[in-house]
Length: 534
Image (cartoon, rainbow, N blue to C red; front, side, top):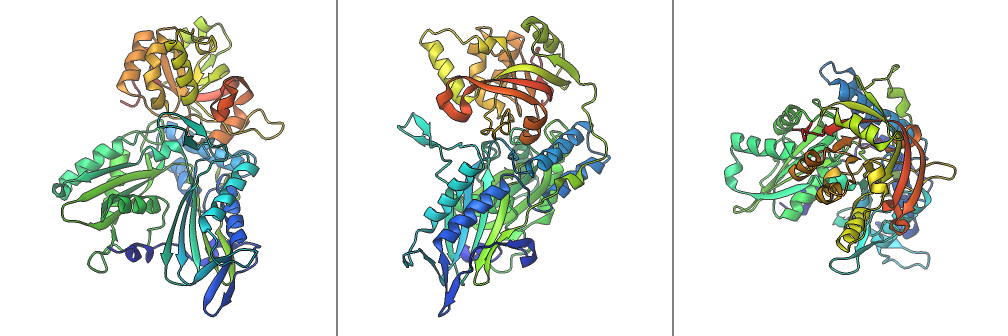
């Protein structure tokens, strides 16, 4: 299948889906479009500034439908409402949708009859440089989290401090216009991506369905469902499979027909999308805390392949579905419209966690620890008091210190450990957007820390592995999950105070003491090692 076969189906909807920007329109001379490079930077800046705080039209309506579904569980209605309230707060433009403001992704399809010009009249400007510059400006201006790590050596790395490099993928297509997809993807949803090279024997209904069941269940809750689950079967190369997977997850292949229009052309299968949705529902994982809505929607794309190879890619876009399409042509610059009023979708009364147990984390350690140890997996809690915030880099440093004979810091034993990396706070605010990171990345640290009486209670999102569950049971610890993807809501409603106490050079990964008020969470692994997700 040629590249043209994919690009011909790219779904950019009608022009009424876009807002025209106040950037001077490109000039068209002798059938060629001349696009100002500075305009590319400005388009990129505006796109990333928008998607950090607002959702594309239609996404939140799908989420709101969970609230009216009589088959949805009480817990996932609670999560869905929290995500809608989060969207309403984020739309104010102060607190980003998610604390993980993601890798900046820029896909572009550049017409062959276009040139990029600069102020000095040159017609050969580097598109990627200007697009990346716009992303950098957005992340700086909007206090978005800088999450990119660059290598110093094979084993050491350092934060780039500007969230660059962006992932820029630009491809040539016929015509005299430039089309874009701007997206921000967090580490949790990216880590749910899988690619395997399957045997052609998988092309039997029962075998493919069994394979998808295993892989969809393995998505778990760590990537902040409800997800858009994308599946791509086939591809001339693994890289083509992954490229199609990313576009499908963001809805850019929605116009691929249900029947291949020519030999080697792609197709989209409504039948297998329905099967994937049913599989997701049966996992019981639901919208993070159990239920039917692991998937909000599904996409299934079938591509051509070499006779000896059959790639299978599965990936997700998380509940923070941050993306915007854009078009540049001779009439001007156009950016996809976003949802400006999420509050219109909120219910008149609030959903609550049934029977949530209040836990005072500022009581003596023995008191709150014993209270949590009594709770079985699946119990809802409301957390108030002080926690230590630390994640990957801080854990690695503390573990290295232990190997060198240093004592574990007292703050790792005196308080629960919340795995998080917030955005920078706006002036006068206690914190930036604040939410959990994936728990399983810290699994290997639990046993050595717990043997020192530290990290007995941890707070994050998603499930944990067998190693972690065994360590928690052996130490009488507890693992709690709070809602992933509700970082603006958590910052506004649940964080009273935040201050850096150690490893300030780590930026968003510095160790903090944070004081909480009524943070909702769920016991995922109890003191006996029983897991809610299993």
